Amino acid sequence: MDGKKQFRLSGGGGSEKGGRFKNFGFAALLILFGIVIYAAFNQPSHLKEVPFSQVVSDANSGKIAKITIKGNELDVTPQGEAKPTEKSFKEESSTIYQQGLQQGKVEIVNKPSASGGNFWMQLAINILPVVVIAAILIFMFRSAQGQGNQALSFGKSRARLYGNEKDKITFADVAGNDESKQDLQEVVEFLKYPKKFEGVGAKIPKGVLLIGPPGTGKTLLARAVAGEANAPFFSISGSEFVEMFVGVGASRVRDLFTKAKKNAPCIIFIDEIDAVGRRRGSGMGGGHDEREQTLNQILVEMDGFEQGVNVIVLAATNRSDVLDPALLRPGRFDRRVNIDLPDRRDRKLILETHFKEKPVSKDVNLDTLAAKTAGSSGADLANITNEAAILAARNNRKVIENEDVVQAFEKVALGPERKSKIMSDKEKELTAYHEAGHAVVGHVLPDSDMVHKVTIIPRGATGGVTWFIPPDDKSYHSIIEFKDVLARMLGGRVAEELIYGPDRVTTGAGSDLQKAAELARDMIVNQGMGKGLRDQVFHTDDGMMFEKMMHERQYSDETAKLIDDEVEHLITEAGQRARAVLKVNLPRLDVLKNALLEKETVEADEVIKLLDGSIMPPDAALY
Image (cartoon, rainbow, N blue to C red; front, side):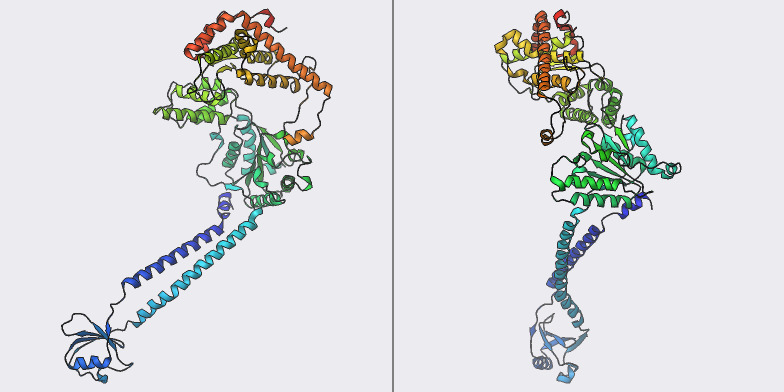
């Protein structure tokens, strides 16, 4: 049986029966309503009932023009009337003449008795409400039973089954990630042609772990694998296994893998597997921790597949460092596919994919946008294209212009402009000096990135922005580059100090100082870039707060003091270099400040012109 047919058979029959039962009850109510209306509007007119002897006497005396006989019922039409006005009843099984009526005195009309029709009508009116009430009661009992079944199905898997969609996702719909797609293409081959690999003794991989930062397309690639293989696709999140009752997650795991085996060949996709796959033995939850029970069941199911059952588990996470080692061993997740942030070429392909269905002006340069968006994920790029379309619609344009794309990129990267925020002239001047200080230091230092834009318009939570963008994608950074970044981070605070005095510095540099401290500590603790602690790392776990508290620090108090001293040295050195640069370039600082006060935003080309002639002082160089 093929995968599509099995997918159709796996539908819920209970819901179809419930739907048919509901339709039956609704139809019964409609029938009852129709009978009531019919009985109300088709009742015969009420006739005056008279004794039969009076009818005979009036007929023999010529007062009656016509008598209509319906079984034992007589409808009497007096002389001068067009319709019956009286009714009477004769004796059973006797003619009217046998009871005293003289022949020829009145017109006699015999009609079939309507007693049979009235009998069935009365029966329907009396019986059908009982039937409808019984049907409603049965429906209520079935509904209550369904709720009970739902409670009993608490341990059933909540995985959603895909596989018969009209618009399936394939690798052609995923831009970039060529290496990842190549690794996953073999998984597709395993699913489509298992005998090809079994013939040479190759075993089908039981698990493929997709590792990468958020927004890089892990879930999209998993859907593409299912679409390429034309196989059913069970999708579930790791958090859906975990409940407050112990054993529910393990029960759901068993049910999920049972369904998957019935629909083989198929794919099970577990998103955010770190929700249940974290390292065991942390001491959290005691010996009956629900998360650990669920993980144990996943380990058993993945290592217990029968031979010839083509079920592959795809899982995605951005925290592979916290996963239990038993999950990562061969035989469980045999393959690991790293999905990194896209490079410049892939970013351009992703942008072209998202702009493909949108009306875009010819002046939109996607290659330039791809160069500016270094470090962005696929989700970030999709957000930029959507924001550009929203801006075009807001401005009543039918085509997305380059201006919309630029504004969308800056909105996503820096936050929306807050032009409504009112700043005094003094605050504007201080902000201009602050941002100009960042720009001058970053422009002068040789290993700093290029200035892209300087603005004193508040964006997001900041009062102004000096934006640096690297000319090329970088995979590695040197100590000199990091020190130049630290110096330009402190350029704003140093500019305030030089212009207004050390006691007049403001809180505007709070975010800069925090980021500088984080970068300096990362250089010492994680990158081994300290002066006295060179080539030594003191990495700390990035897990939960409770786990941090439980883990013992791997270095002594003396080493912690050395780390603090190294961080302080880096920050002090960066401040001295920024001060040296700004002291010899104060005229250029004032020129850029005046331009910012006049225009509020200065682009990269104009910044380079305004800062032409800046000097690199000897005491700001690194030896």
